[in-house]
Image 1 (cartoon, helix red, strand yellow):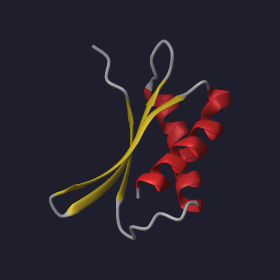
Image 2 (cartoon, rainbow, N blue to C red; image 1 turned 180 degrees about the vertical axis):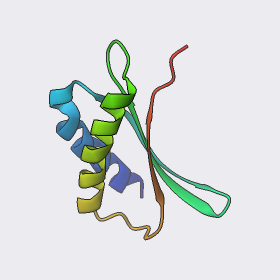
Image 3 (cartoon, one colour; image 1 turned 135 degrees about the horizontal axis):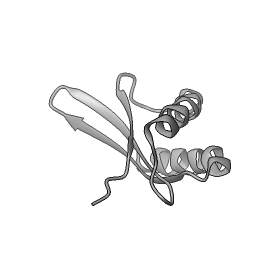
Length: 83
């Protein structure tokens, strides 16, 4: 799974490069009975909600084209915490 996540992160970075969005991390975690594929995004100067919404559409397209071994999971696109 680690290799799949690394490949996904590279593809996402290429897709979001023109928007100057940085793919900080891509993780897969099991929390209770749920599985989460979490993509953490960042941008110099911060990332606003509208940018996250537009980036999520692109992330979803890339993830749909990938061969993720897990069949059921929740895609969670988040911004990197500041503080």
